[in-house]
Structures are given as C-alpha cells and as structure tokens.
Length: 354
Picture 1 (cartoon, rainbow, N blue to C red):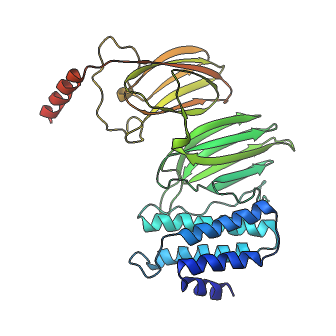
Picture 2 (picture 1 turned 90 degrees about the vertical axis):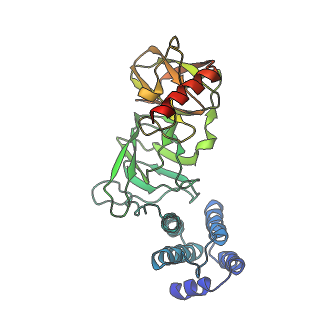
C-alpha cells in the first residue's frame, strides 16, 4: 500500500502533491493538535521541495531518499498513535537531510542511534515533532540527527534543563564512510539555560543524563546563527552565550565571576571560522593596543574570577563558555582607530612578499 502511494506521489506535480497530502491528513485519526500541526508542516515542506524527479540530479541514491521522505509522510498522516507519528516524522526529516546533502555533494550523515534508558532498554520518543526541537527526560542517552535551519552553516543551540541530575551534550560528526569525531558542548548538574555555538561540520547531538529525579527534563532548539544577541557596548550575562559583534576593530574587556574554568572565543564574521582555520587578513594593530591578538590564538582562558582583554578585528561572534554554565560575566568594548593609510602600507608589504 505504501509503495503504491509513493509511486502515485512521484507521478504528481507539486501542486497535486500538496493537495493530496492535505487530503490524506484530514482523513487521519485525530491526534493532539501540536502533533497534527507538525505533520501538516512536514507535508508543506515536502510540497515546497524544489526537486524534479526527472531532473539531472535525480540519481538513484537521491531518489531513494526522496521516496523515503514521501513514505514517512504517508506513515505520519495515517498514524493512530503519537509514537507512530513522531517516529515517522523523525524518519522523514532524516531522509530530507540526507536528500539535501546528496543533492549538494556534501557528506551524508547517517541516521541517529535510537535513544536508550540503560543497557538494552529503549527510551520512548518525546516532544511534538516540531522541527529543530528535541526533548527528553530521565536517565539515558539520546542522539539526534541535527536538522539545521541553514544547511551547511554554523548554528546556535538553545538548551533548557529543569530538575536535578547530570546533563551532558556533545557534538558528533558521523557520516557515511567517515570516522566519528566531536567535542563537548555542555557538562553540568542541575538546572541550566544557555546558548552554545554549533559548528558547521557537526551532524549529531548526543545527550546523556544520569542521577535524574522525576522532574528532570530538557529541551534543545537549533536556531540560525543570525539569532545571536547583539553585543552591547557594556554587556552583562550569565553562563553560556553566543553574541554577535557588529563593529570594527576594538578591544574587548572580559570580567568573569565563577569558581570554574571559562573561555571567550572569537569567530570571524567573514569566513565563520576561528583560529587557526580563519585565513582572513590580520589587522596592523598599533603597538600600544592591549589585548590578545586573535590571529595568534582565538580565545582567552581563565579559572575563577579574572579580567582579560581580547582584540576584535572585525564583525563576528563571541562564544562564551563556562564549565558549569552558571558563572556571571561583564563585557565592555572600546573601538580602536586604525588609520587606513597604515592598513594599506601593511597590506602592500604583504602583497609584495607574496
């Protein structure tokens, strides 16, 4: 039956596909309104997909993912339980992510590992199926395939944790034929609210919770990097945060109050990379300008209370991290006037050396 539905959908134009998707959903069993809305939205995403099944990029591997997404929608629209609907939505969006990667020649991520509540014990799916949002509760490990608002670009992850227990989030880069790599984003105990920088190459998030009470719940939302809060001339905050800097050359003063290790990292706004991967031209800073030069290293590190300076060469992003996510900080910026003539002389000398 599913195969017949998929074949029929492949033969429809996109307008006919949308009408059929809406018609099938209206005949489905009623589920909670938020889940119904998620299935409807997924159908609209499928209908809006600019993909020609007879086009030059419709190779077998790509068609396989397209058909998998259509079949998942067929299952979601006919689901009779919340679990079945959420499972179908998860599978459908995973197929869409792989489809986009194959169409654009990017590394193809593999499916996420199923959530577990301990050795051999599966954890039920939670949430409403809302795109870019992941939720969970209790002890165990949950791995999610990252659905980015802007494929191929860095993003922000907004994390909220309530209740008591250990909470750990790590990024994983796992693709077909690749070796898994990754790094720690969050490692805290108890309640938490913060924003973290999500690198462009990460494909999965792994969430591990332990020693949880019944009220220990978490949610993660992936949002575009453009949603970062703009850095003010004087900026106060707590815990992990990502701020957007819109100014020119400046000296950033960092003051932290915490009992744990912390760091402030600069990400170049031109290439969206941090040192040593950024190859944008360095500035010719005057000799009397204080601060750590990001071209020789991209962050300031400290433990406990401290006051440090960091040079900001151009618009970009500041990634603030603290080991337990609860320390307070105060940032101030002071613009630096670098004469254009000095920049031209410096860049001219660099050019002649090359």
